[in-house]
Length: 191
Image (cartoon, rainbow, N blue to C red):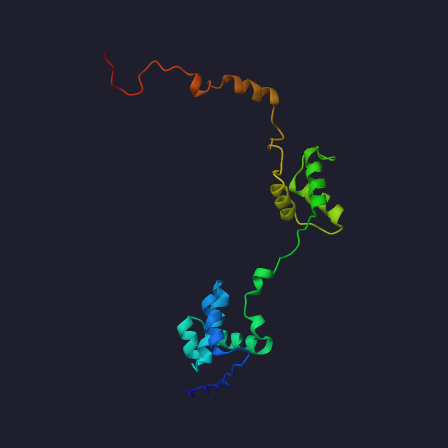
């Protein structure tokens, strides 16, 4: 079987944005683990180590080391800190005003069927937002606002309410109201 040719990687060069002593200081002062690993890789590379060796020391891949170097060379030291900490994320679907409007609506009976189900909340939100809202999103907003989706207890179509009432009367009383004449175990208590 013919052996595949290995592509030789190009030599990595680190742009001299910072002196190696500064890279070491930034590595030692970093508190964020991602940022610390990046500074550490750059410092080791500035010492003349090979990217594969740096990857082995840090427990990352050679590819990761090369990405960090490319990022550093292109954008400088400002690109090394972990940018995820500054990302506020997506804004909430409902503004505080709409959240309060939904809370007030949920306190009243639903106009159509009296119960606020997840589907009813999804329809209500879709009307307000002007776009479809999935059932599970509506359910999640109900939970966030302290409500739970309600649905009536299932009832059999052929059930006879009168017969059910009679059946309930023939049931035994709850255990707390029953008086037992026998001791709890078989042994008799003597005083």
